[in-house]
Each structure stands twice: as structure tokens, then as C-alpha cells.
Image (cartoon, rainbow, N blue to C red; front, side, top):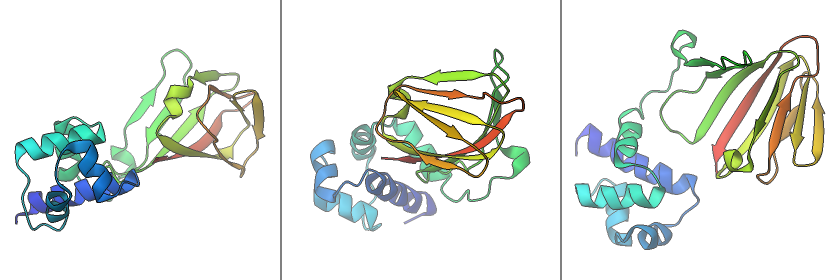
Length: 184
């Protein structure tokens, strides 16, 4: 098998394991036999485009995304200068994607929230992932449903079940924090 086929096999296994699915569950969801999935994951068979389409559909990923993740599997280092930085033009909130873009299932995001800024998110933004917030500096009030968590530097909060949330910086200085995301 070639390096791309090996990467595809590894990506299929990672996607299945990130969802805590058995081979049988992926087979049921995709319509691809358990034996074929096992052979693909062990690099004993190369999947056809049709099989890849079925597997990517079961994962809820476009085939192009599944293949792109496989192709970037070796990207394990994300240099600071290459990490994408996005700034909200309305609030000045910045979001830097720290993690390598290899689709490992773990994503680290560094956020700077200016003083007085409030950023709400619907519950759907938290579906299918687990999150923790680690505050580096400043103050952060994180509202999760009806509960407000007042975070101070060094505090780490694991989010509960998905519900509407609000990030708010009540302090006089920017709040800088890390968000760690893992797919459920």
C-alpha cells in the first residue's frame, strides 16, 4: 500500500474511535461490511471511492474533508507564525487555532476577549464536543445556561451538557484563555 492509502486507513480508524464506535456500529451506519472496514483499517484492502463515500457520510464529513484530514495526518507541528488568527471586527475578540491541522480530534484555541465584551453562543455550538476553558490572565464570567462561573487566572472549567452559553469579560484588562475541544 502507498502512503496515502495508509493515511486514509489511519484517518478512518481515528474518526471511528473519536466517536467511540465499534466496527459493527460503523458498518451499520455506513452500509460497508464490518470485515471490509477491518481490512481497510489494517491496510489489507484499499477502499473504493464508493466505500469512502459511504464511510465519510457515516461520519458526517464530506469526502473531500475526510481525504484532506488523511493527507495532513503527518502535520504534528503548528508553528506560531502559521497558526490562523481570526479577529471579530465588531468586538475585537481574537481566536487563534493553536493545534496542528491534522484532525486528531483534539483542538486547542487561544482566545483574547477585550474588557467589557460579551460573546453568546447557542447550545448547538457545543454539540458533539467536550470543552474545557483554562484562563491565563484577566477575568472571565462564563454563563452556562443559568449558572455563572467566575473564572480567575489558573482556573479551568469543564463544560457540561450543551446549552446556551456566554463568554463575558467583566474586568478592566483583556481576558486570555485556552479552549480545549475534543469531539464526542
